Image 1: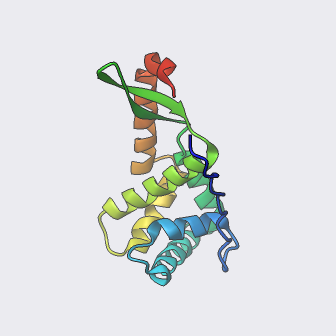
Image 2 (image 1 turned 90 degrees about the vertical axis):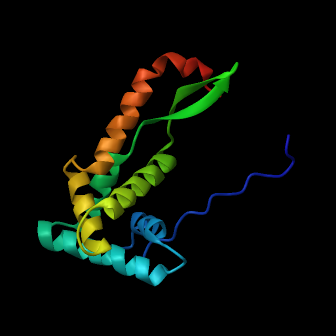
Length: 156
């Protein structure tokens, strides 16, 4: 057993424009090669696009989208006696938020069209309406967990 103490989780600072931790987490996920100002520009532009298209508060739409995409369970591979089982596990809130942000950005990158900000805005608006790739991924994950419910007793 390790004698080293667990590291404390550092909460993300709220972003300067919208004063939201969720926007900061989104910027961190969009970030590539350490170019934070580019990532911030993409996320803020996406939020502006959402505000202009829907005439609503973009933070509320982002929160709705993240809530809709957040999975309740996930499956993890667990090796028992020479065979591998997909074991369903419940997810804590923080991990669920991280997974949903990751999926939103992943499916935004895969969309066709010009400009990451536009693609991200469209994916967020779709997720807020319970459509889009990230919602499909959530449903797929839940189906897989439901199908492997019999192996739930292999939990860690």
